[in-house]
Image (cartoon, rainbow, N blue to C red; front, side, top):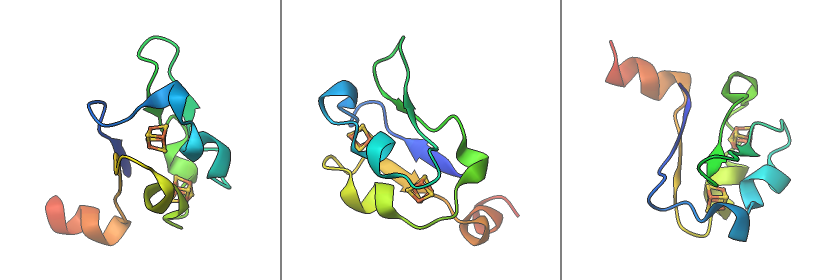
Length: 72
Ligand code: SF4
Ligand code: SF4
């Protein structure tokens, strides 16, 4: 998983910035939780537009380099 959204921070439908801004359409608002869900995370190009525009700092974009450091 390359994208982690903190559900305690995400304000979901009140915001939807990541849904609107991601050029790869990675996010949807999950109808059950009402939070942003990176369903198409494998399309992510690690541009960081979502994380840098999230008003609650809920998004962590994990680059492949970071992931391999965390899970060697
Ligand atoms: S930009 Fe942040 S707060 Fe807004 S919907 Fe996405 S994850 Fe949630
Ligand atoms: S880093 Fe860029 S491509 Fe990846 S989910 Fe965020 S906005 Fe979309």
